[in-house]
Image (tube, rainbow over all chains, first blue to last red; front, side, top):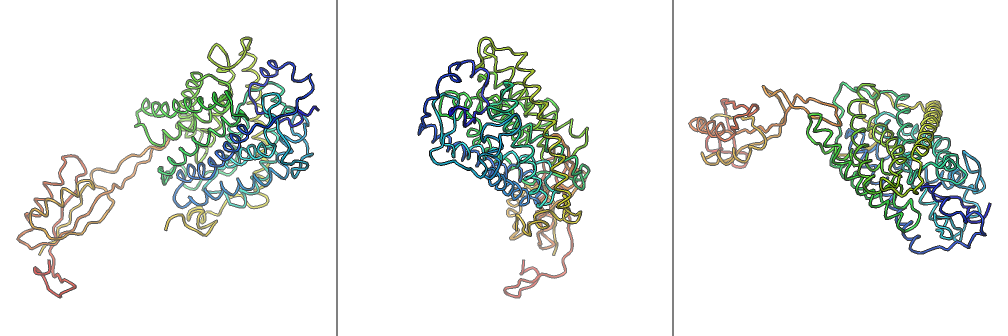
Length: 442
Length: 112
């Protein structure tokens, strides 16, 4: 493999279109990649913005939605599993996902423990001859692994043992996250070769996390008292703070996925603004149309649904395509959590499936539509929407099956090792005291 | 001496306090409480899931006054806490056997 593609670490921007646009890339001798300080600075900033999405963003968002007796447990689970992901990532996660080429499903183990990587190593971007330091790329992708496994926990909080969370996290990352990240983002990956569009991880992060969350919640069972007792968010103020931090951090997530500080990043940025704005308002509108008041939690939920939906489309849509996508995803997610969930009776505690799973699917399929140049997207004039939608559909379907099967395996391993669920007494008393020996509020 | 206990809507506290000062009440005790009467609680909706709470937040005011003042105190509370809507609250008047000011040892009416 040539040097330019050896670090085959392209994110998933319109891959087919890119290769079509750069026919000489594969044939000509690879130029020595140049590391631009502006690109590097932006990617370091983006990486830290994604970290802000985890701690404090997701921790406050999820923590506020739980009952006060489980606030610390929720925050601790998110923080600890993110730390675990970071360590596993540098040990064998990076090499599995992006290592040294490899096959359809994983890359191989040539870069285990970051073997051979130095400050001079570079990772390719979407522009021939432009690279970023490989360590920056490793860190950037590391934060994605960390937040994705933390997102899954949204469905199982308030009842899963801390030890079970850690075992599940390690197994799930290994058999679900790393392979899917490779399939979507590495040049040898299955979905990448199919031409799937996933700019910043709609498939890898959101569908993956959402489906896994649903499967985990189904296996774990409902919380005591659900749905008859009053189980309501203990602090929507914190959920509101978390929502704001998530939105700000998401610019690192989406605009960072351009891997350079350029026009593609700018497109991702404006789409992350407008799709989210549209989704925040449309959730409240859906509430009004169903006879309720426009609520703060509805606003926050809409914001997150919009962010999720625009993730695969961030650099693959025009701003007005993004606005429509945000609105549709928001309304569909509203119906999923308000009507589908009670009807089916599963206890997805914080709606990880309802918002991330459903929103991710709308986003992934919608990306195949809004990519079209006729709708203002960045696709080439010969863009074949039907074909692209079919590719998106296959990618989504495969991800759902892979995530579901992998989660079943991971949860049952966690169950065998730790027992999975806390005792009823601990659950009633709260996981803060029962699992960590502390209270959030004194 | 009489103990006047009033359960009122929380946002009416300032008006009630002013009205009571107007009739010469020198002190009162205020507690945040929860309860229900004919109002029967309220509904909260989180992501489409409805929860009805049967306990509504209220403020409890306790005022001890001379027997001759009790009528004026009740009237002042009734007038100032009234919104005309359901859930405005209730007033109870009880007899008080003894009052002592801890600092000075004064008793009964002089202790109020």
